[in-house]
Length: 194
Length: 194
DNA sequence: AACACTAATTATCTTTTGTTAATCATTCCT
DNA sequence: AGGAATGATTAACAAAAGATAATTAGTGTT
Image 1 (cartoon, helix red, strand yellow):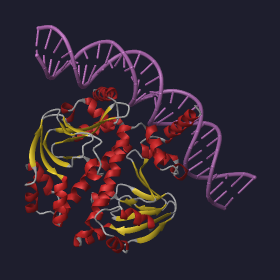
Image 2 (tube, each protein chain N blue to C red):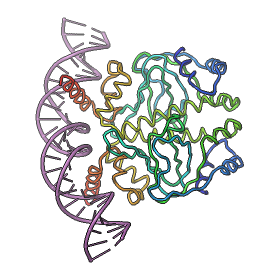
Image 3 (spheres, chains in turn brown, orange, yellow, blue):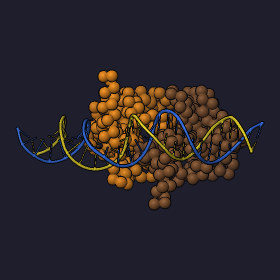
Image 4 (cartoon, each protein chain N blue to C red):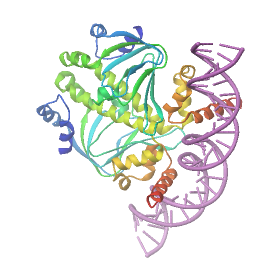
């Protein structure tokens, strides 16, 4: 819970008592490793804060290949973008890579509260801005950096990810194949021992 | 002006009279080809709707290479993401590729109005969601598609872009070099005449 | 311990991209 | 019209990535 409070405390324009009220709406829930949280095609508008664990967003391409679109871990929020911001069924599946603990709310409920009590509005604005900021930064990594540089940056940002997530998922998220990631790793260690 | 009205009319929860009021705050402005709209490093919080023309978002990498992060054209909004959602000086320059006509507002002013009159809030939420949706879709193109597929999709989405924007800018936006784009084009026409 | 299953690495070959430089093609300018 | 400047294409080579398959490593299961 502390993690979530810390996250919310950054929000300008929201006072702590309001937060307490909203947190009352959140339910703690756990997922077992491998469990699917939101299934592809569902219209679930759940909004979750990850207390512990990693959730993977994935789908299957037309050609049958499975791709990992996104990995989210403790301290971050997870929601079905399609269901919430595009109002259509989820194109992706969201599943736990490890035992996961989340705090869950229904976005529809939040929306109702915000419509009735405008003072909660800054909360929504804050989340949207945060997600947008993260997404824009991700676009930047694709335009500015090579696959190897993207991998280095990811490891820099979240070093323990390499021990917690199978490389094939990491590769997919970076837009490359597992074979290519393997070669990148090899090149990096080769260069490390000059 | 019609274009902007059409764009705003899609927004659920905002009534037309409110829109008229906000539009009163917007000023029409033109940019000459090549003119810089927002300069890198500036803290301008201008928000603009493009009536006509194309605006290019770009920066210079550490290694000196110039990159095009984004192209925006008529019917779309332009704003300095850094200044507005990250509250820091712009990392990018925004410049007109053609003579451009925009409707311009100051985001700070909008923010003030929204804080005082909550009924305008859905407008902000709508813009944020729209930008987020676009950004997420862009991330998807990098994860799901090859450079050639990304190029095809861009041309499909905005066919006249190839006649209006130098290929080197398009290439950069797709995360590839101009030479590589040239080869992709060659491959496409070669395959067209089976 | 033996087996099955999955992931990671390696090998081989093909395709694509990056890099650099040269050559066309266009546009713009005086 | 002539010349400068810019952008696009092509060439030639190096580097990286994709595809496929084989091998190795690591898990977990019984």
